Amino acid sequence: MFGFRKKYPPMDDINAESGWQIARGEYEGKVIFTRFNTAYKPVAGHPEYAHQVGIAIPFRAPLPTGLPSPEESAELQEVEDVLCAELEANKESVLVGVITTGGMREFVLYTSAPQRVQEKFDSLKTRITTHEIQLMIQRDKSWDTYKRFT
Image (cartoon, rainbow, N blue to C red; front, top):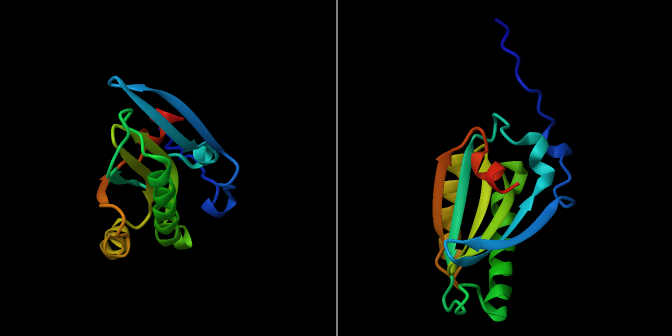
């Protein structure tokens, strides 16, 4: 029996700026906003990026809808910029999506270096002072989390 493997394009060939899709819906009776980058579809399941990273940020003062205020949204954008600058360096990790619902925002990434993500996260916890940040790393070689939203 033949064992054919999918040939993935190099991560450097992905134009990550071009594929963001925003969706709004309802999840467990709460408003949910998602922003996922469909530009990563050709590399979904890339064997070098077999770990999914979730960085959750609880809101300090969510609106009754469970969403952040405009002021807190601005702060969260700054946090996102710091996270991306640190974690996406050298394409060790790629931000594929953002989920906002129920008083929190979660950044969804895939990484080729889970140990480095943990080390960088420990440093980021001291640098990001506006919000508490929480980390989860799990094996997801098929990119099931990403595929669920794209």
